[in-house]
Amino acid sequence: MGGVGGKQGWSWIVSAEGFVPDTNSRQFIWEGVLTLLVAIASFWMIHDWPEQARFLTPLEKEIIATRMKKDQGLAGEGKLTWRIVKKALKDWKVYCLMLMYIGAAVPLYR
Image 1 (spheres, rainbow, N blue to C red):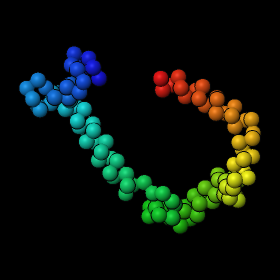
Image 2: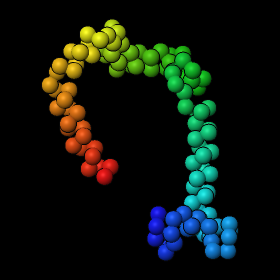
Image 3: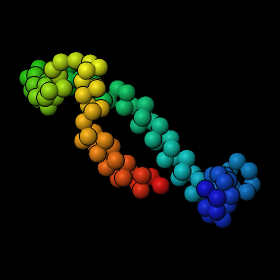
Image 4: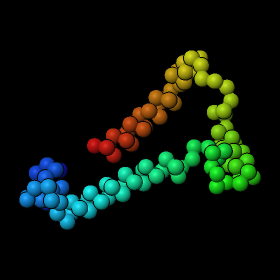
């Protein structure tokens, strides 16, 4: 953050008089407070499973559960075993996909 607003480090959050925030830092602080409030409220607003959502009717819960099971595809069948892991590690396409992902992600986060 060096140099933002002509100030070093995080000193742009407070004014030169001490811990009295200037106009820009007040906006920064209010955005942080609002984000924190929304994050706390999300624990009661977002439901993990359709069965837990009280605002859905029984028919809607059933429809959503059916869609989720259909979207799951083969992931819902069987278990993960070491045989499957070994088979995946022997597949050249896994390593190709790894390289493709690294090639796309590294430039984005550099």
